[in-house]
Image 1 (cartoon, rainbow, N blue to C red):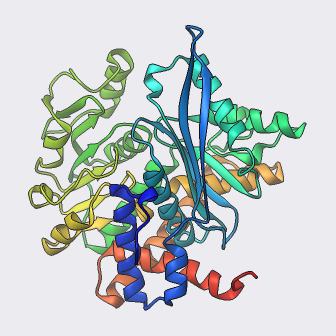
Image 2: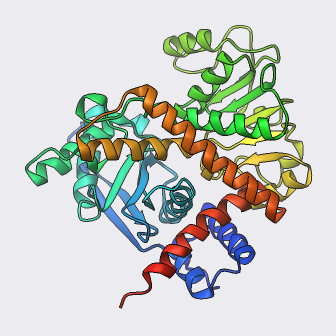
Amino acid sequence: MAELSEFDSSLHRTALAQLDLAAARLQLEPNVHQVLRLPRRALVVSIPVRMDDGNTKVFLGYRVHHSTVLGPTKGGLRYDLGVNLGETTALAMLMTWKCALMGLPYGGAKGGVRCNPRELSKQELEHLTRRYTTEIILLIGPDLDIPAPDLGTDEQVMAWMMDTYSMTQGKSVPGVVTGKPLIVGGSAGRREATGRGLVYALYQAARRLGQDLRGRKVVVQGFGNVGSVAARLLWRDDTVIAGISDVKGGIWNPHGIDIRQLEAHIAEAGGVGGFPGADPVSNAELLERPCDILIPAAVGGQIREDNADRIKATIVAEGANGPTTPEADVILRDRGVTVIPDIVANAGGVVVSYFEWVQGLQYYFWRESEIVSRLQEVMTRAFNRVWALGAKEGTDLRTAALMEGIRRVAEGYRVRGLYP
């Protein structure tokens, strides 16, 4: 099938390759396959922002809806210099499979602004967010498209988005975004949801492989919202956190890193670098250190053809979106490494986002214990479906997860038909 140059990016090529592989295994009807390769709609906007120095700077922003066949779209908003149309489109596609796999009534979406949020003041970030929201407002809404935090954004950004949208409606609309602060309709447990869901998936994989995670050596690349929560939960359950990194670099101690002490160090120093009793390593070096479990929870494209044969972990749990390239997937599979793919491992965030959306629509909020229990149930059920399909089809977990998610979306297209 011909590629469209406007969507071309490394991550989009990866997403298409994954779709095509799963479609072939499913013997997907060619017309449905063609529809799934393209987004339903994509919006590119310019975002003029008056900076603190009085000058106006124009940023590029995107919002992509991949599929709406199963319901309104759902997907994060990222602020990063690497944001482009191809990456945003690919991430929207992955969200479609992820939501379908988890049994959520959503299609996939993604948004982004090409910027470095660390170089912007809080006031500039607010102006950027409110103008971006205004520019994409025709695409978002509680029954249309519901953004959430992602790389470079947080609950404050979501509060600004919600407020901007609400001002245009003349009333408070908490269901327009998820990942908000609790005080304006956020959900208990949302901030920890992705990392917690990853740990649930990891425990299911270990159980299926006949392993006990206690005492296992773990490396976490990326100590943001996902990696930090996963590391803390695993550390509390007596795994050995041997290596951790952030955007500036990493630290390594094969005897284990005390996460409580590390968090105190980060609060004072602003990063993991310089943590006492640990050796400095680069992000690339950290991936290749000897460990039992590797959690790439930073950015995409970290495990590639040129380093996959040096990965020493027996389990890779993908906290980031697209951290493993298709070429690396083949190498890891041939070496017997179990990869828990991103659309399973990091789905906890969208699951609890769904819980938040439902609570916001009902104006009735649940206890955190209820949310954690329901998250564990959804993650466990989805993982077990994927594992069973992989065993039945004789394939790896990524292919099985994609097959299950794509099959559900394709069935939606079959039932609904094509309009007109």
